[in-house]
Length: 393
Image (cartoon, rainbow, N blue to C red; front, top):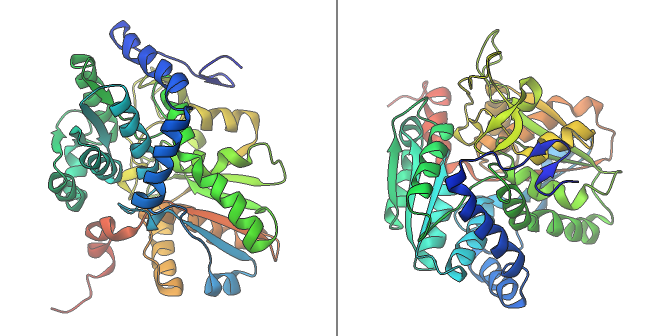
């Protein structure tokens, strides 16, 4: 396989001005990240600060309802409430070791922004987070969290004012200050080496699942399910099991409202090949190559592309990808709340919804692991008007 490619996807499709920092980052990955000192320090941060390993929890009530074992990898229990912090702690520590005092990031749902701001505060780095203006409104709680942590939050007013546009703005800012700034990409997207770097920092999820399932269930899972936007939580749990062909890998994309002609974020299920944010991948685009608006009830999945490694896993047939609609995710959100006492992120609810929708095709007694990538506190502003209009004052 060519370096930086997954099947035919990946690469470095960037302006010449971005090649120096990309090459610098690749060198740092090869020299600094594998070093014993870096790995030991990161391991302590993940254990003592983030709270790893995160729990692997067997749902007693839903397992009984479904007729098979439903396990949740509880990334929602991490410090900051999502899987994002695994990557930001790694990249922030790398930034420090590279001698750069400033870190920037893009964010959609705000969880990556919060995690970047958290890591920056802990490691004494200056931090600026770019966020689409639409997302700053629907995720206002996370905007306040980032500001409390000392980050500057820049609302992006261009384009659809969502994650795609926040990423564009962050890339422009990186070009302007690459000497003292590291761009902490939040998912397995963008130009090489970012998809590999983010995947490697997130792959601790899958390594823990292997160990925990072996100890708690006596063997590997039969199916692993994760939501996919950019796809870092999914690659984090998939990567360890790609060689294990007995384990079925299922990625779940956001299908939008499901109405005819609706916008979605299902770039693998509905997209075509194209270049976005530095890599060749699957995109939602018009016939003449213009990026289409994306939509999802969950801000973190509201992105018109996906990580090139996901596109490669789809191409090879090693992983399968399906779409779940807004109303299905909202229903799964409520079911997990009421049956297990866990409030999931709307992103993670898509993965739970796929399991519920396909329960009849899953063999009784199967072991199904869902990556519960984040908690749902951040989404209350979205679900309240949809679920609680009938509450009397």
